[in-house]
Image 1 (cartoon, protein in one colour):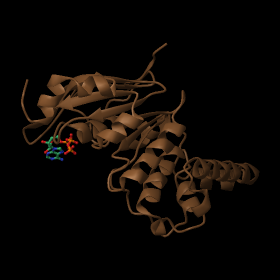
Image 2 (cartoon, rainbow, N blue to C red):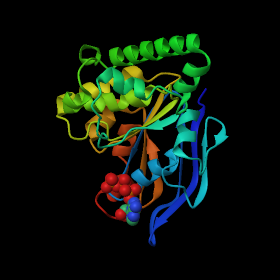
Image 3 (cartoon, helix red, strand yellow):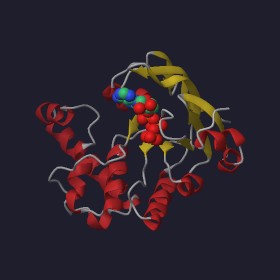
Length: 255
Ligand SMILES: Nc1ncnc2c1ncn2[C@@H]1O[C@H](COP(=O)(O)OP(=O)(O)OP(=O)(O)O)[C@@H](O)[C@H]1O
């Protein structure tokens, strides 16, 4: 059975008269790795910003896991199980890989301090759970051998994986990946794509904005194409590559 984890309907958002999103909508199925592609300026980043709560849409509806999350704050959305990574991995403070992961393990800001003051025994259990989760995520991302290293000293590809690791610490159901292989060499890009494929499963889905079409082909079960702020078409990678409207959109020709 195909169940929709994310439903985006008629979302609109403009900036100073430019219609970045102009009634865009699509579904993301639970258990999938779905690509979101389109030429420059199609509205992909704005769509990620609207879904993750960074920018509220002017109109339309975004439903995640059966709940209307339209206009919710990024914190509220991530607590519900929808998180995002950023294209340019945000600066890592002077922390090790393990510490960086642990920093993103709290469900609520201040949660650990509250538990530590009220229930010290529970606080130790919680620390252990988080540490176990961080080690598990590091192992799955093949970062376990550098878990004690400073995050700032990691290679470009390892930093990209750590950015995904940070997102996973909150036990999300859906991760929005913003150009997960941008800036790394093709072989490392394929490795990162392999890691993402290994992570995906019935309880963890991905929506991926990526310009590298080889990676989209390797990674995505299904691909949604946006152009001029709207949903243009969708299908398997092979289907959309043969679609004339997609070729026209990339060449800047309007249908
Ligand atoms: N904060 C903003 N202020 C003004 N215009 C914006 C802003 N954000 C996006 N836009 C405009 O909205 C349109 C869609 O931009 P968006 O970044 O969402 O597209 P994109 O598909 O992610 O493009 P790219 O692939 O180049 O990253 C573009 O015309 C862009 O210039």
